[in-house]
Image (cartoon, rainbow over all chains, first blue to last red; front, side):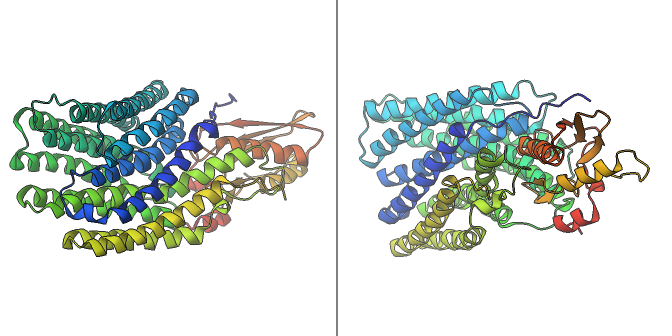
Length: 421
Length: 109
């Protein structure tokens, strides 16, 4: 019988820095929310909101997703990670880039430092794209999941490049088009291209894996991939050439939304046909996050036809703090303990009694984190709708509680010492 | 995995199964025997024990740990033999191979 190569997980040194930095960024994000509560009740193009959004999108969302993605690329593509060294380069450039960029945003100081920060983030995006393309190239067969991984990394590079142009324009104005219009295109390339497509791809692999789902047909995912990309490309091309038109934007939203629905149908079929009936709290985080994603998308017509700025702020907040944060809060404890456990115990398993990955963190605290997270999103949404800085500040305190619970467990996992008894 | 009573290596196989009960799939929290991952045990050669087993999915992130776990457990149970773990996905793992106890632990209705 031929020995099948099951591959090696990437070294922890290439993965864990993403998790540690991401967790720290989450705490900083919640503190920024607390100290800049007023910024969420005014127009989003202000120094505090730009800092908060980029801390959320890059420091928190992208950082953790990069960590998980570098670990999961081999699982998705059934091949070892192309280059752990490039993964490390990706972390260095992203971390330094975020520090330079967000500091510039906070102080509204746009100069070469800001541009170098944006260039570093582009370098990080290129590094990630190289790893995702070269890891996935020898997949034995086409898979929709692999396609989502590659398209999302292309969209991330595109988003970072447009971001670079935007910061150059802030330092040395050269755009002939409205900066805010390009900013909207940049934001949606990131949301619908990078985050949505990566989450679609990775979740379509992980949710069936965790639930032991039996539904494997890919037709819904293929349709989802086409619709998500079609809607986004039409939105960007039309928005750039002719400016954003509410009626046409609704059409493109419907196309992307249809793509989301096909992805949800795939997940729902796996959920219905799952072997494992018990749904753990990590999966509950994921399912609740999808509710916030759905509400955000349904808010798009409201943003287009009502000029009140709180709806746009609510839209962005639900996407970052409801959807992306919800996924990360749950999925961290579906990936990080296993990565750390592998480092400590993969060679000891079978020799001595070893703890299970779930023993590396406190499950009760993840339960608490789940409920406090829901409360934080709801109270923050109420504060934004009412444009009430006091309620937003109170919500920020709840967010700091969420971050504290999360960081406690992340540190507990990262600092785990090998137990040999 | 069924061990025939007239199997010349029945005693060794029972001992091996007992050892493999200690190897847990870290994600599913169930041992590899109850999960039905072990397809065959071979004691034909006097200096080694060969185990043919599967994983719940190809390129399972815990695959290396499970494979090492099976090798370690068998080499402790049979110190005079080298354990060789071969993986196969033919046939692929499915719920049908899980024991009643495994199903109970998985929460399968």
